[in-house]
Length: 215
Image 1 (tube, helix red, strand yellow):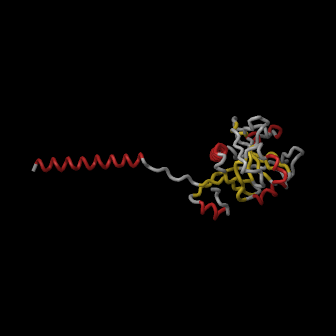
Image 2 (cartoon, one colour):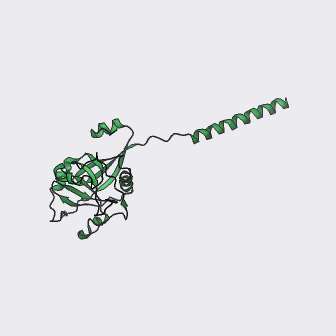
Image 3 (spheres, one colour):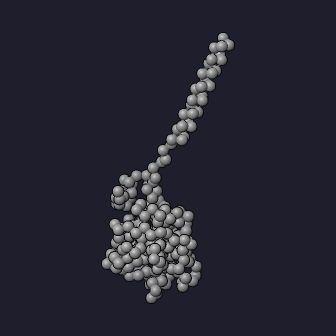
C-alpha cells in the first residue's frame, strides 16, 4: 500500500513538472500580437485632420507617433501659412508669447533623411521641415501639410515626405482663411493637439476613412 502511494506521488510530481515546463515553453514561444494600425488625429478649432504615416519612412513614423503620444504637440500652433503651398507647425517655440522665435525650435535633435521617390509632395501629404543642411536631415518635430501639387512639386527629393492626411483636408481652407502677416504667421494662434487612434484591421481603417492601406 505504501509503495503504491509513493508511486502515485512520483507520477503526480512528473505531471506537475511537465506541465510547468510546457507553460514555460509556451511563454518563451509566444507570438507577439500583430501591431495595430495607427492614425494620428490632429485637432484644431477649425476641424480635425487624420494622418496616416508611411512604413517607408520608419524613423519619421516612429518619431511622430512618439511625440503625439507624449503630448509634445499639444498647444503648438500652425505658425506658418503660405497660400497654395503649405501649412507648417509643430514648433514648441510656438507655445510661448514671442512670435519671432517661431520656426526655430524643435525637440533638440534631427532625423536622418528618408526621402523616398514614390512619396511625392502632393496635396494632403505631410513633409518634415528642416534647415539648410547638406544631409537634408529633418527637424525633430516641425512638419508641414502640402496644399497643392503645383506649388510643392519642387520640394520632391529635398524634403522627407512621411505621411498623408486621409480625412479632414476640407478643413484646410478654414485655417488658410485666417489673417496672417507677411511672414505667414497667423495674427491669432491656431493651436493644435494630437492623439493616436488604433484599429485592429485594415477593414476598420477603410470603413472609417475610405483609405486603403498601401501594400
